[in-house]
Image 1 (cartoon, rainbow, N blue to C red):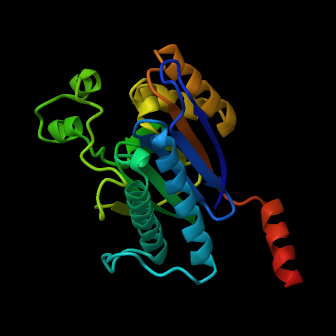
Image 2: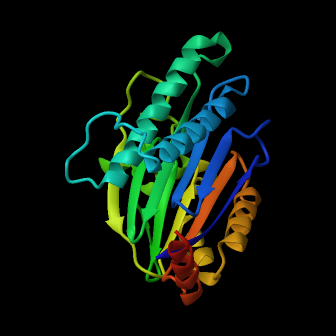
Amino acid sequence: MEIKACGITDQGLVRPNNEDGFYIDEKTGLLVVADGMGGHASGEIASKLALDVIRDYFKAFHEGRAAPVGKFDEEYSEMSKAIGSAVRLANQAIYEAARSNASWQGMGTTVAAVVINRNRLSIAHVGDSRVYLVRAGDIEQLTDDHSVVYEQVKQELLTREEAQISEMKNLLTRALGVATEVEVDVSELTLSAGDILVLCTDGLSSMVSDDDILSLAVSMKDPTPVCDRLVELANKHGGKDNVTVIVVYVRNKSWISFLLNFKEWFRR
């Protein structure tokens, strides 16, 4: 499998600054979105710190220098354990940074991180940033929001439509940097050629419906215009929050890619 990815982040129409961020490395298959929170721009610091720690952990992982952080079920692949470890390490880094600077106290961030290794997708997330899978004309949310209203939806106390307009929809039950340890949701699945992944912060999911995300994702063959159009749509619907989205198209490797990889291998 090979991937083609694009990401974009936008301040939106209401927020005074952008506390979102994203990271893409098509070569290693690592993709991350983060939505910071905290006053005096400390949310921006938290989201950037999360992205930097996760990126650096994976560099160390590929070089054989990264130790696992925490315990995982043995059923998980090494890549899933790595992405979970990276997110746990990011939590520790943000928590310690907040303790070291009074102006950063209370800062935190959500994170939705994936790594694609051949045809396997590993996911680690905390908070209400989401990962969607578009497959065979349908869209599925692969992550559960760690929020008060999402818990109410799962308990059938609220409908999804009611949750979208609830005054408590921004109240999180989990975030990075709030405590010394955080529970990280880790999962994995098999990808197929033609799959499309969408990672986003709640600035998109609260403004644009799943059906609209699906419609745009399947209507184009390149992720760049999809990202642009999704952000435009979020702002058209109010742009009440920072908006960040990554769109990934999963494809079979082309003969050109195969020959280039073979040429690189032969040189070694």
